[in-house]
Length: 337
Image (cartoon, rainbow, N blue to C red; front, side, top):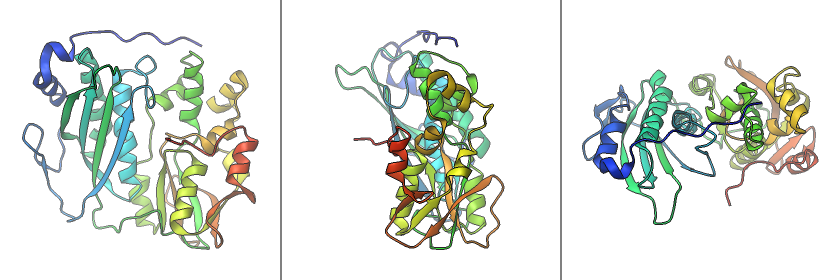
C-alpha cells in the first residue's frame, strides 16, 4: 500500500479576486445542451420541454465529505456532481444542469478550484449537462473548510416521477450499481494508504448507474431512491415513505462481495467486514427500486428482496435492520447529526 501525496499550491483566490475565480471556473464548465443563457448573467435560462423540472441539492463540507489530502480537486468535482446527478436519476429523470455555490478561504489555490470545475464538467458531459451558474463567497473568518453546495436539475422527458412512496406489497426489491465500495475505500484511506486502487477510486469518484434511473421508470418502477447513506438506511427511508416492509435476502446481498475482489481483500487486510460495507456503507449512489412482481427488471438491476405489508421497516432474512447492523459491528448507515 502507498501513502497519499500532498496537493500542489498555486495562485490563490485572494490574488485573483472573485471574478478572476469565476472566469477560470466558467472556462472549464462545459456547455449544457438545455441552456438558452449560460453562466455569466444574473441567472441561467434552460429549456424545459417537459414543463416539469426535477431539482435536487446536496452540500459537501471539507473534512466531512472530502479531504484534500485524500482526493484531488478533480476527484472532488466528480464526487460533488455525482452525488447530485444520482438524485436526479433516482426520480427517473436525466440531468440537464448544475448550479454551484462555493465558500472557501482566501488562501485556496485557484488551481484547486479549476480542478474541481474540470471534474464536475467531466461528470456532467456524458449527459449533455454542465454547470450553468452559482455563487462564490469567502468562508467565515477563522474557517479553513471549503464548502460546495450543488443543485442539480433534470428532465423527466414525459415520464412520471418515481418517488420513495410508491412501493406496494408484492413488489420486488432490486438494486443497480455497486454497494460497499466507497466505504471500503474510506477504510483504506483512513489507515493512510491508497491501494487497492479500485476501492480508493470508488470513494474518490463514485460511479452511479445514471441510465438505470430512467430505465427503471420506463420499466414501471413503483418507488426508487439512491443509496447515499447506506443500503439499510435508505431502504428504511423508502419503507417509511411507502408504509411497507422491505424483506431483503442476506445471501443475495453477500454475493455483492467478490471473494477475489477489493472488498474481500481489504477486509482481510484491515479486519473489516465486507458485508457490513455492503449493507451500511454509503456514497456509492447505487439505485434502490421496487417493481411489480411481473415486471422485467431493466439491465443492471439485481433482485434483493420483496415488499410485504406490515409496520414500516427493513428486515434481512427476517431480522430487523438495526440488529443485523449491530451484529456486523456497524450502524445502519450515515447519520448527519
